[in-house]
Image (cartoon, rainbow, N blue to C red; front, side, top):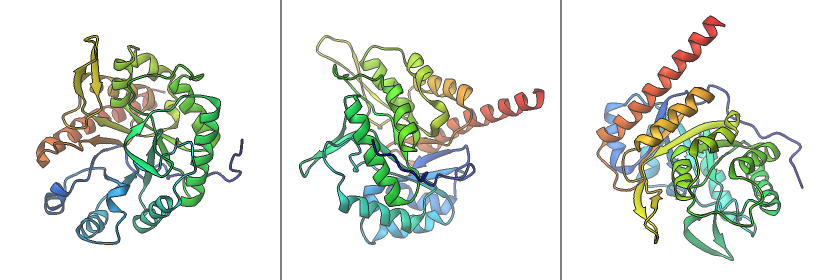
Length: 299
């Protein structure tokens, strides 16, 4: 398998502080600029800013002068069986060059095939062939951008019988071979493990936490399958679930403080409820940092 001989440029250790951030939404542009809330960073979906100009760029340009920025893509189709879409990659590169975000991330998923694009992030079988293809695509993206990207674990509803890797092991091998870092979406862990009736703590025990450079937290909706079993939907339309907060604190205790994003993409609330979720994450991060300092002082 082809592996880049030049390590992709990664973010400096202090590029984004171990603070909470939120997804930037048009409904909040004005309140952010008027009140300058004390957040660690904002994150934008790359595809929302691939146009040449207009109000989104005008507001983002001003917000960028005051805050660190993360760009999160949803359309590269890293796991696609076919080649990456070159025009889309060029648009992403232009956006990254324009705003120089501290972090750039994408999903371990596919969303296009044969020129058709799907409004979803679809799962992959974890096989040697998928591993080769994902690493080749990551190498192409990182060489094109001239920097390291973060790859996010997916939310899934079924597992492929053909998989020969556990998901956590697959993510670890992708990071090792491609030189990418990882984005750990804890809500995705909760959703996938609930839907597939496995233990999220066991999943996290196997996950390569040392490679994690960012964490996502989000809300999920509850449904049921045809047998009446609980089915969680990665909806991003409500507050973070209590179980996800528990898993988050568990990860911080093992990994240490990591920049953390609150995702709320549907039924977007007024600013205060979103800010309250970020404040809760900040409290957990602060407690984790204090604990780490105590360990250093006692060590």
